[in-house]
Amino acid sequence: MIRSIFTVIFLLALTGSWAQSRTSSPYSFFGLGQQTFRGTIENRSMAGIRSYADSIHLNLQNPASYSKLRLTTYAIGLEHTETFANSDEGSDQYDATSIEYLSIGIPVSPKTAFGFGLIPIQSVGYRIGNFELPQYSNFTGEGSLNRAYFSIGHELFNGLSIGGEFRYNFGEELNSSSVFIQGIEQGTNETNETDLSGVSYNLALNYDTILSNGHSFNASVVYQPESDISARNVRSLSTFFLSGLIETNVNTVIGDETKQDLKLPQELTVGFGYGMPRKWNVAAEYSLRGSSSSASRSFAPDNSSFTDASSYRVGGYYIPNYNSISSYWDRIVYRAGIRYEENGLIINDEEINEFGISFGLGLPVGRTGAFSNANIGFELGQRGTENAGLIKENFASISIGLSLNDRWFVKRRYN
Figure 1 (spheres, rainbow, N blue to C red):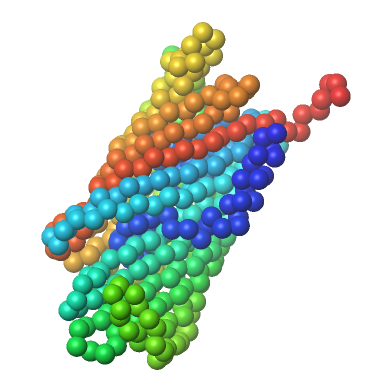
Figure 2: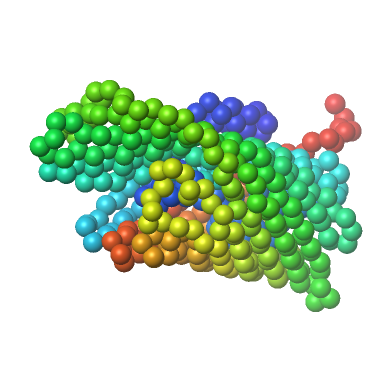
């Protein structure tokens, strides 16, 4: 039954979900868009930590964690974000809703498991400008860079696991800018439609052990090398009439096609965790991402640049009594975390940083309630600044995910 439900969801998502906008931030204009993926709902409820792994949940940011998987696991996540923006020129509100991931993990032995799925990793989605005369302007963008991946993890010995992930990155982004000045008969529009494709991979080490006092200690290292991505950009220049807020295209003046070899930056994450198995765990992580970016696209503004990016995360979970018979609430997983990210984006000499506080619940469901669960996550955060004429965004998001477990490759004793 679980397989059938997930297969239907998977096929429905393939037919159109990956074309939707997953962000509504003006900052998604820069580079290849805003980095939107921070792990499963379980992980992002703990600030996105990737060092913790267990036997019934997928950790999509650490392929070495697959070695701990004991049940076939299907995972899907959805997110809705409300953003409240403020600048010197006023305030605005916008939202975005999307499917965040579709994934399957399959154990093939007590020490080895693999997984595959689809993830949107960076997204573009914005509409900004001045929609009143005498000078009308309209800047819009949409699209995303997606990832189809195959991961495998294997325990080498005594809690030390190694993992790797092969990725095919693909997507399409559309950026449009229109300007109309009162007194001039026609306005001008520039549209850039970019097709993206390329392969990448990452490697991971994970270590888990039980200390003499019965507590657990875990550590992980995840490394993503720098990789190439091909961009085919079609630029069109056209003129239009403006009637109210409706642009009516007159004709295309220039249309040209260019190709660029862009870069996805390298990234290194180191994390440590400490806790009590099936009771609680607290983890801390640090990530460093290289400054190579794709902001060199022909339509990138001169007032932006990229530098190395860093992020700091602390998160964990608590379970009152995971095998309680008398109380459903004692079996719930309570999660929380805090993160601070220096995104590496600089506009008008101002760094665009991000801060978030998250919390969530893991709710047991079904006959195998100790395993399959519904996950709900919440995050409150802030991005950007009002300095130098920029925009400060306060955002609130709610995430809902399913982690469904099944047992494959087990020979039945009776038919």
